[in-house]
Length: 281
Image 1: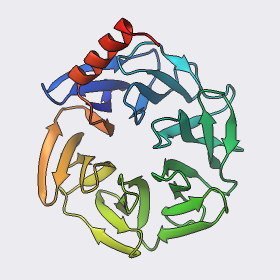
Image 2: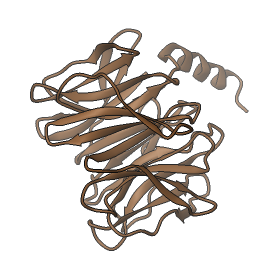
Image 3: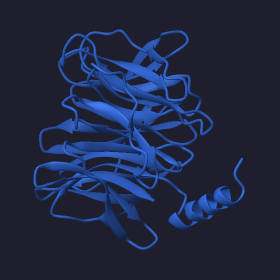
């Protein structure tokens, strides 16, 4: 199953695609902008951004698009949600404005208890948080060391902050593999944005083969394959890359961004739903 955002006639809408059949449908289309959808690791819940009430907020819903509910604190501008990888937890990470749009920091929210926790307290814009599989380290994008953007790793318990991806180019939008050994990222500037892969243990970078143009929003599918958005001819399409083989997943005249993939199929989720109705806990 695949979620992503599509900019259609100036409005961001959340699209669902059944990869088994190739069929797509609009899942969220409110009076505002709806984007950045992310599957919960269990696959039954989705968190996303929306400005339908005038401010950027986080909402959750079930995988069928029902039960939408605002979950982020009122009066705050938030975005770039992600889930803690532990499927037994309902904890989301995100950025929150922390003194204006040019200063944002990372926070977490327990959707079960409603408890919010500050993660970082830095200058500049700190965004796109992605917790590692062990839940102890958060990879994120930052411009706190301007000029340029960097990717840093923040250890929650010790508050240690290291930035392995920095330099002349801008680095942003990190994503962990399921083993927690590698990180995908975007690197470059202007109309030339490539994808790279960082080996955490070896502290080494590799630029990956990818289409020309601007590549963003990479997400691993397992440990070695990944999906990403790329703009070559005026609009973003979604691609899948396995080793050096690249194929188009979804192609459109609209901008397609922020893909989120889940290994479960529509049929599997339907079977589980019917079982839960037959045998409620």
